[in-house]
Length: 218
Image (tube, rainbow, N blue to C red; front, side, top):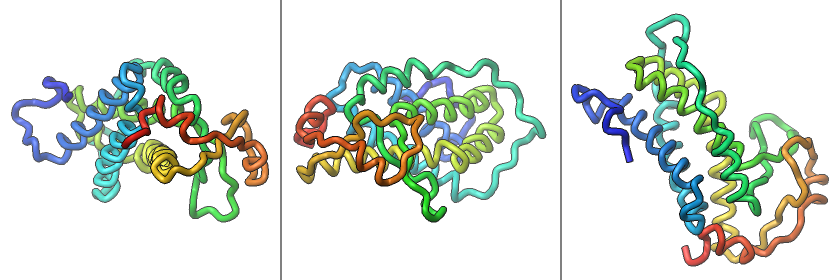
């Protein structure tokens, strides 16, 4: 699903930048296809796979030495593509399990979980990745790698990790035949403590969401 015009024919496919760009573009294309809703029965497992693969690229960026762009100031990439349609499509598709609780920083003590949305996270990740891809397609490879590395640490890495954990937990609930505590009525503009999260949580049996989201018979 890679764009045949993405790389110059002189670039080595084993080059670090080429591999990262391929991973980024593959995630964007695949996620956009899932959001179309043509195959909702496979949405959750497919997203779990795609985010896992993206985080491998993120891990490589994280382990790489600090990347310094060629130019002192970031060149303008033009208007940022709108991700609201992507966000809304996922919100509808994942409505039964869109909201989940997340600990923002596991090393900051006594921080209560906060509500988050898978649909918001996916749109934010795509927005970050597209920004770097615009630099890459314009031939600014070092700028693209710097942006992907910086935003991996500051935004899309933690966001993707939290989303992966939520999706993995969902699949585990289904595979282990365990009831799922849904955060009924909980919204992401609320700041709730542990007791509030427990009070808001309703009981939704896994079988009510397993079929529509492609989790039966995995």
